[in-house]
Image (tube, rainbow, N blue to C red; front, side, top):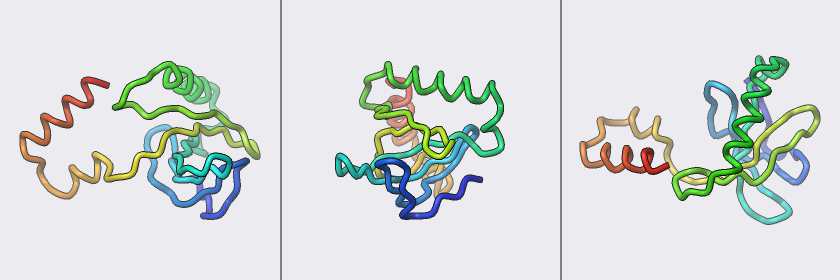
Length: 122
């Protein structure tokens, strides 16, 4: 697992906290010091950094995301390489993750349908 300490500077981005991780990477909340806004930094997982297929998937995700413009899809702001680490800089959206919502309680049917509709629209 990638471990970036709060306060670490990566170019113009200051790491604030870890948000989570998934199949391909780790995500951190950061401050864009140039524009004065919070962003999310998505890093490829350390154990797959050297894998050419994973690197291609990471770049394909960046290219695909950059072509999309929809309220239910995060906006890609930048793609960076700092100190040998490739990462995407995306819009930071505060709030609970879907996983956290599902872990805390069963969701009522109307809420499930509302979420499913947002996913389908995206």
